[in-house]
Image (cartoon, rainbow, N blue to C red):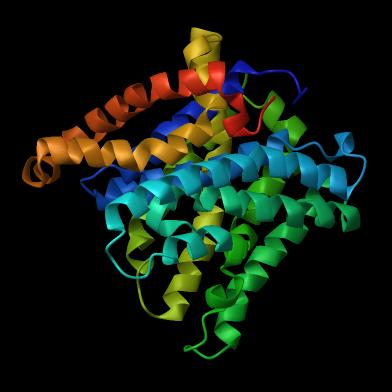
Length: 337
C-alpha cells in the first residue's frame, strides 16, 4: 500500500514543505511560528517518512545503508559542498575557512545550508529505527519503546549537572534530534494501516474529536512557546516533552486534511514534482528568501506580516523551475537513477 503513490501523501508533504518555507520567512510571528508552524512542519515530515519506511525490502543492514546513503547522503554532500564553494568565493579573505567544511562533515552545515539538519537527522533516525525493529517488532510496542527512548533522553537532562549539555556529545549527525523526533517516525510506521484508513468521512464525532485535538495542541504550544529559548534546563526539557505530545495530537487531523484536499483536487503533477524535489526546496529556500529580503529591504520586509505568506508562496514558485530541471536532467543530484 505504501509503495503505491498516494495523492493524499503528496498533499500532506507539499503542505509541510510550504510550512517549512513559511517558518524560515521573516517577519517572525511568535504565536504563528511557535504555536502552529513549529508544531506541524517537522513532526509531520518524520511521521510520513516513517509511514513510507518498509524494512522488508532490504535484505540486510548493508543493503539498507547503501539505499539510504544514495537517497540522503548524495544530495546532502552535493548541495552542501556546492554552497561551500560559493561561500569560499565570497569569504575567501576571511579567517576560519574550514569551519563550514567541518560542519558539513559533522552533519550540521549551519553556515552554508542550515535546513539540511533535517536530512542528517533523518539519516541517523532511520539507522536507529532499523535496529530498534530488530528488537521490538510489534506496532504499539515499537512506538512505546521509541517514546521511552525520547522521554529517557529528555529526563537524562535532569540527572546531569546544568553545565553539561548532552547535545554537545550527540550533536554529530544530529543524533540528539533523531532521538527526540523518533516517536513521530515510529508512529508513522507502527500505525501505518490506521493512518491509511483514517479520514474525516463517515464519522462526525471522530472528525470533531481529531479537530479538537489539533486545536488543543496548537493552544498548548502557544502557551508554552516561551519555554523554548529559556536558559533553564528544566523548562527546555518540558518544552521538548510537550512538543512531542502536541505534535502527536495534531498529526491525525493533519493527515485527514491532506486526504480531504486530495479527494477534492485529485492527483496533481505540480504537487508531485514539488514532493519528489523536497530536498531541492530544503536546500534553496533560505537563499531565495534572502534575495527577496534584499530586494524589498529589511524595513518593509519586517513591517508587513502579510508578506510572510506572499514571499513564502513566491519562493515556492521560484524554486519550481530549478526543481523541474533537476528532475528532468540531473536526477543523480537527488541520488536517483
